[in-house]
Length: 246
Image (cartoon, rainbow, N blue to C red):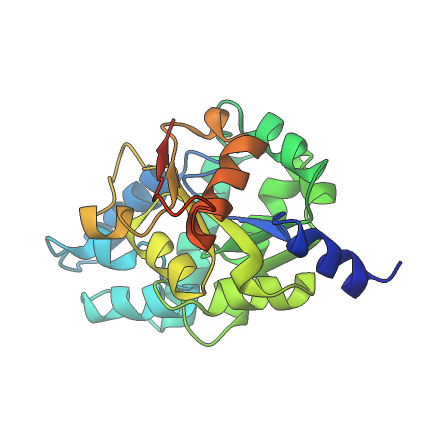
């Protein structure tokens, strides 16, 4: 049976065509690493950190956030700024990236049932480092960095590209996200969304309301939750709305 026919059969039965994960804040506990590295770098280089700098950069692509740091007064080209920040983040990860509890088990459980994609704002070199050192690389059929698309999150580009590479419609995918801009990006791509709110940088309420399901931790992300999110987005069969929170 061809991939297309398998997809038709699965979606006709109401099944999820693919699950697309974010990386930072969903699989690894890294958002505060990024924030700390960039804050220190800006201070060292004589820049001016703004009150909303953290929230503005969450979801930006490498090109976008390095250009933004230049606007904060950090000297050097965006390319030079990006190279140094990425080096510092990679040094912080080392050979043991900060995996979130239950992340590996969640990925393995879902990979047994669905094709998986990864749609991350991290640079490709950091994505590859994390996947290599955590043993998760083989579970993802498509991996996309926002470096590889026109716009970072909250634009939907990285999620749409992940669906394209997986060979399935974005509307039949479920995304897993933790941040305001990530939730908006996945929803804008037409995907059902499971929110795993980041405890360090909680997403805005309006972004959370875009999610069809919510879990407190990645360890609580199960195939049942993913399927329920997809069912909620499609609309309940009995005509009554149902949004789940685990």
